[in-house]
Image (cartoon, rainbow, N blue to C red; front, side, top):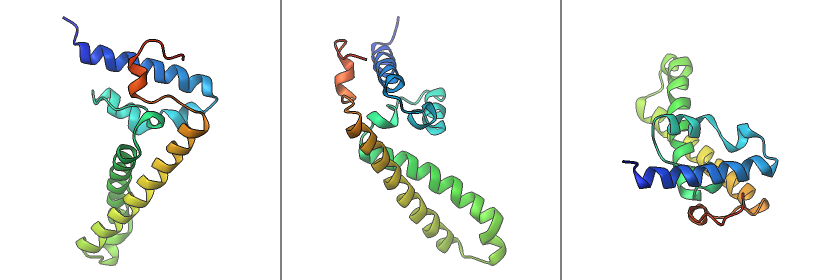
Length: 128
């Protein structure tokens, strides 16, 4: 038996991707590696142009802060003797800054291209 939640999500995702493809936005911008990775892991998140500001800021900020913090710790901070708390604060600050910036970028694109809401994509009459 097919899970109705899964098929509903897949239908919305297909509609969103069709709309994004027609918009003229580059695929690398509307399908960032983080989103593609989450989909491959089975996590049901909308494409960033259709996600809320808060969820986009959280997902992109956590990902960036974690990756950037680990790289900086291994490459620079540990050899400089930076304390763990200072490194954690720096990574957290970078993650928040990056997350809010990316959420603003996607919100601007959503408004500029007048994309429908993610919820409205549940209805089959939304034109892609």
